[in-house]
Image (tube, rainbow, N blue to C red; front, side):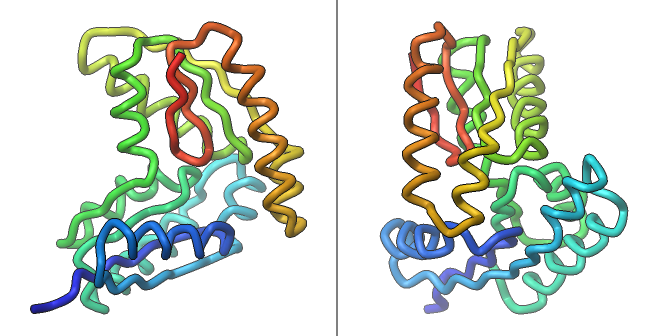
Length: 192
């Protein structure tokens, strides 16, 4: 019997070990592969969004995953989540955007959301998914973005513990502000 084969497209090496542990725990025997392009995040941030060149590169990576025998592609960066909507039409295997399950869960709690993240370019795509999902239900979402630049700086400086401390401290402050849910960069939901 063939092992499940998952290819994770990512824009950073951060949290790779966490991803491997999660997959091994949830899908024993999984064959995981990573395609990582650290320049994408820099390019998207500089351009203010995914330029055509970034979209083209991501499409090539998705095709490479398909050719290598992947059963599933996981797009692990919300910054290029909307690019995944493009390349999923060009491959014959399923594509999962890392933020989709979080957003589907978030809308079960209400319509008033804080979007909490470390990279500003990832937050708009998450907000748009939540807004679209609620619009499909005839509801209107209220979203407010909270960028945690200090936490991002700690992560890229090689201090993930400091990043986590900053995020937790600021998440606790948000928790007191009355949101129905807080969607965070770690793609988890904090319900009020």
